[in-house]
Figure (cartoon, rainbow, N blue to C red):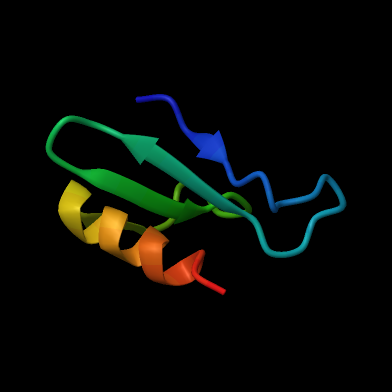
Length: 56
């Protein structure tokens, strides 16, 4: 499954988030710890989260 780093994550280290999409699940992980735990959410929950996170 291909992971995509957040466009807000820099190349300097620090806090980086990666997301991978599958038809039934959105996976979210810390790019500094790719073998660590990943959060799994339903696509509808991810869409709702993004709506709230990007609303000024």
